[in-house]
Image 1 (tube, rainbow, N blue to C red):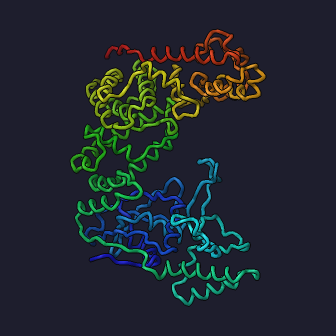
Image 2 (cartoon, rainbow, N blue to C red):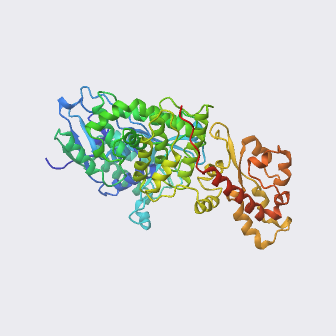
Image 3 (cartoon, rainbow, N blue to C red):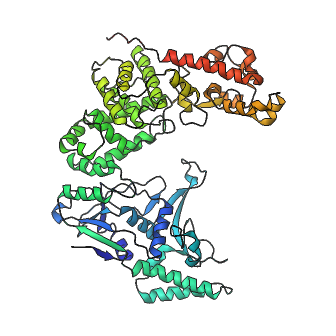
Length: 591
C-alpha cells in the first residue's frame, strides 16, 4: 500500500483513540515558535512532510508499551502518560511525525505553559498557560518582506483572548474544530464580520474572510497529512525503519529509542518509567539540583556492566540488556551515591561541564557498595578529597571533551585493576592511563597558567576557586563567589579618586575578574563585606583568614593602588597550592 492522506481534523480526532506513541519516541521538544511556524506553513499551503505509522495486529497489541500524545505542553518538557489500549481497533503507532502531530494537538485543543521572562523556575507564579490565537485582521500578503522563512499569519500563544479593535480581531484557533459543516462555518464567518467595529475598512473585512476561510479549509478540507502505514509485525524491521526516518530533523535521543527495547526484555518492568523516575530523582531530590538525562544513565549502564563503552544501539543487544537488568539496582545505587558525593563538593547542574567525567567516580562507587565517603574515617576523608580534586581537575582540563569514550575505557581499566574493598581511589593510575589518550591530566605550568586565566563569568569559576580550600562542604552550605577587591572599587570614578594612572584602568578591570581576585565566602560574610575596601574589611577577620584564603602577608598589597602587585603575589600562592595539591599522595595501608 502506498501513501494515503487525511485532513488535519480527521487525524487529530484519532490521536489517543487510534494513534498512539511507542516508547521509542522521545518526548515533545518543540518550542512555541516552532508550533507557530508549522501552522503558518499549513496556512500558506506548504508541505509539512510525510508521516510514518505502524499498525499493530490485535495479537501484538499488548506486547508494546505505548503512550498518549500530550495536549498540554510545558516549557522544559512534559512526560507522556502511558496509554491503555484495551478495546482499541486498528492500534497505530506513530514512528515519524510525533512533533508535528503534537504541535497540531496543542495548537487546536491544548495549551503551552511557558515561564515569564526573568521569572524563577521554582516560582509557580512565573508560569503562564497559553492557547494559540490567530489575528484575523493581519494581512498575510503584507509580510512578503519577511521572506520565505518569515511568519505571514498572525499566530500567537496568549494567556487570554485580547480585546478586539485597533486593527486586531482575535480567534482562538481551536474554535475552527466546531464547524464540521460548511453551513455552520459560513454562519460563524458572518457573525465575525458583523461583530467588527463600524470603522472597519472593506480591506480589513476581506482580510478577515480570507484568513478565516483559509484556516477552515486547511483544517477541514485539505489533505495535509500524507502518511505511510507499515503493517509488517517484525520489530527489528520496524526499528530500522524508525531509525532511518528519524536521522534528520531534531536529533533523536538514543535512550528514547532504546527504552522500548529494554522494557520488552525486563520482564514487564517499565524501563521507561523506571529510568524517567530515576533521572527526575537525581535532578530534583538530592543535595543540589542537577541536569542529568536518560542518555547519561544508559551510557553509565554500559560502563558499569563492563560492556563496550560506545553508546550505540548495537551494544544493547538481548544478552547485554539482560546483564544490565541484573545489575540495575546496583547501578542505580552507585550513580545516586556518586552524585550525592559530588553535590557535596558544589558540583551540580551549573558547574558539571561534562557528565562523562563523573562516570569513573560512579564506577568506583559501584566497586564499593554502601560506601558514601561522607563520613570521618581516614578512608572516607582521604578518598573524598582525592575524588574532589581529581574530578575538578578533569573538568578544568576538559579531559572528557572530544573522544571521551577512549578516556573512559582507560579509566575503567585502571579501576578494574583495583578490586579490594578498601582500595583508595587510584588517582595516579587514572592519570597515567589518561596520558595514553594524549590528554593532559596534571597541573603542569601550562595547566596552572590556564587555571589562572579563569574569570568570574566562566562556568568553571566556582569549582576552580574551591580548589584553593581544604573544605569539601561546598554543597551543604551556601557560599558566594566573591571579588576580594570589590567590583565597586574599579569604577572609573573610584580609580581616579584612588590616584590610579588612567593608563592602568583597563588592566585593573581585567585583573578584577581573574582567579587571583576571587574567593569563596559564606553568604552572610559576603553580604557583610559588600563594597567595603578589602584592606579595611580584613581587619575584622580572624588571624587565620589570610592563610585560608591565600592572601599575601604584605599589608601594602591590600591598597587599591597596589592591586596589580596583589594579584601577582596571590597568583604565585595559588600556583604553589595547586602544585602541592596535585603532588602524588601515598596510599593508605589496606585493612
